[in-house]
Image 1 (cartoon, rainbow, N blue to C red):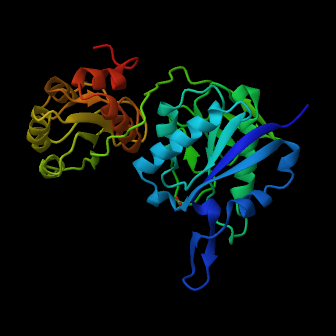
Image 2 (spheres, protein in one colour):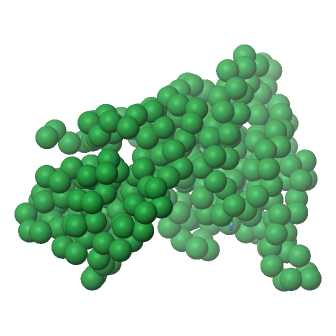
Image 3 (tube, helix red, strand yellow):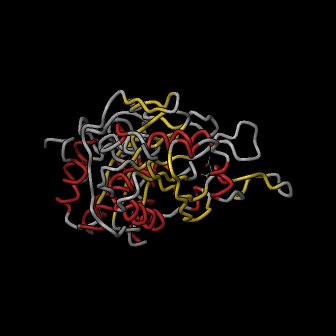
Length: 331
Ligand SMILES: NC(=O)C[C@H](N)C(=O)O
């Protein structure tokens, strides 16, 4: 049987970096071909087509570039001769790109994102092993129809659930609440569970005027008012606990909603979803009655990506609410 064909899109990140001795710090340095050549024996598993996107660190990735990447990926999976796509990415923003592509891609062909935590100059550079595991995942029949997957450190996680949890560890990508979907073991992927709800937002645009605010004890409305003055179309707020805010933020929220700005509430807790359990001023019930939309168990950066895509297709509050709350909230 002939090999499957996998397109590998290189975008940059630590997987493409080496330490520059003049500044004693890592910068992008490795070409796609150099990285691919370190994935030894991969030709026994798949035929690789290299696609050079950019060579940028994760923090240089922007929503516009993510959308561009999503379009390129869509074109690749539409090709008959391509069986799936792997994307290498800086780990700092990897979960945002992965989630955008998960919401925006409909193909049943596997799409996997991977990176590295150690650069090419460090002992134990994990780029080639992560890339190998990502390719093994893409060529697996089991990886079809799973949405976009993140493969690092031999674990397979869903883009909609995974987050970077550790600044240094190779085992940094975790689905904190539900655990990984599967593992890559002995060059084969084994899935243990599935994602029940796949959400899709078909668009080729992105609304960039979406801000993210983290709440803290004593926070007032000044950050919300700053966003309003800067032309915000949407604001995601990482609320406290179950989805509550200090009362001094309520005026800012009323102000934003009265101007048609969509407010999405998530929690600054790393696990659990928001709900309107509390009735005091700034409590979830109070916020919901004002028109705040609930973002379930998404973290702030993922909820922002979803709101950016949602606002690119509609400005109707009920429709945005439906995009976030369908399947998760009944009232
Ligand atoms: N491990 C990494 O890839 C981190 C790096 N700062 C990046 O996101 O580009």
